[in-house]
Length: 138
Image (cartoon, rainbow, N blue to C red; front, side, top):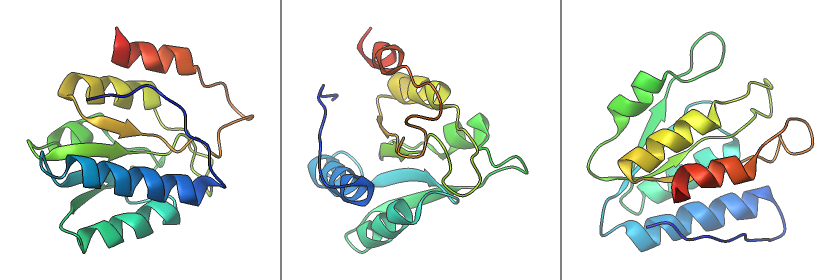
């Protein structure tokens, strides 16, 4: 289900739209459920709204008073039709850092694609892409 590769384009919003629409188009025969977070970037929320018009079912996870999702909420939101989990590495408004390694591990265990918008984190916090890839490819 997973493909190795990097994709470059004009910016974060285009990247988000390309990935979310592309994943939905490719995997909709396997499921139509996407999980994201209520505090996600507007680009993700807008794209998810558009995907619902195409038949996607989107779950918007709440955040706690620290701005983080509960891993139990994420695990409980997963269904047999879940094809994608979207979570930004660093919130562009609050600066809250997500536990992307934990989410990646859950996605790998459940065989669900993981999209992480790391736009706000790059150059500000260390993100070990090799470690994240190891979660999926080992």
